[in-house]
Image (cartoon, rainbow, N blue to C red; front, side, top):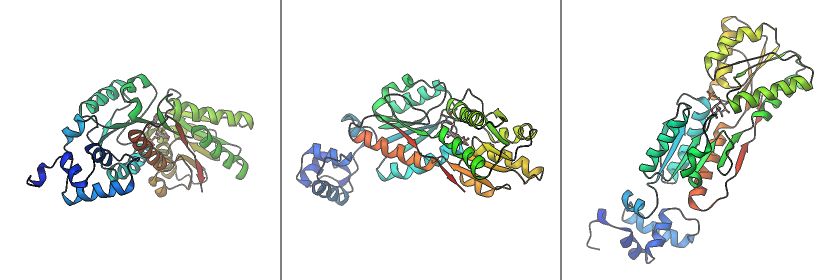
Length: 320
Ligand SMILES: O=P(O)(O)OC[C@H]1O[C@H](O[C@H]2O[C@H](CO)[C@@H](O)[C@H](O)[C@H]2O)[C@H](O)[C@@H](O)[C@@H]1O
């Protein structure tokens, strides 16, 4: 082979491996239908000659640039951080470069980012969805997209067990620990999943078990837990369920400042930060890490072959 190594093309790799050009492409793109012996033979040549397919060549053949866009809502979100951190190694291991972008809960921003990713010929996207983001905004990406936190029909979605998690927290407090005065700090109902579904689960449980509801609702932030603590404590609860880890962290700051240590706190989430609290906090694990792993694997499968869109709900579990 007289060419310099850096100038090798897929055609050269095909010739050296004794297979067709299309087989080399399928190996590069992780097509599961390629026989293992063929894959090994081609990969040995690729490694021997340190071959990297040029991005433009890949794109011209209709493949993306081995880029995955991950659109988070907030870079400071605890839950999204956990999910993204567990996706990244899977994408890297499969040769993809992830680009992480923030939407700040803005649907037009999501659309703008998706346009940019299309221009960059990204292969696929993971979108953390939110109230007000219509599925039509994702239409171009429908078969190369995984949505997190919202069940969009016709899309592969990874959802959290919002209602089940609250029920597990309340059942634990009411049946196992015999609490009768259980407060709740949540998110406003404008936030459909974390807000409305979890709040509804709390009020339904109170109604069924004849518990006087004591709920306060605020924003999705540490400050809410801190600022709403005083109101929820007015009714002297013996236990408080927090809709998110950030809320539990804010509440914890308030309790430690006032030196209140006779209230049981349950947080719905499970971030590493909960290990460093003043008040013993029981956790209902929503499975943020699992959600990330599911999302990455689901997207890779979708990119490799036609996979039917499905909704996966990550099971929640109480961690004591
Ligand atoms: O990460 P945190 O700030 O602690 O918030 C916890 C909740 O984050 C996620 O919900 C929020 O973002 C979603 C997109 O990731 C959005 O769809 C939802 O409306 C927001 O409330 C996560 O889905 C929840 O399970 C966490 O409790």
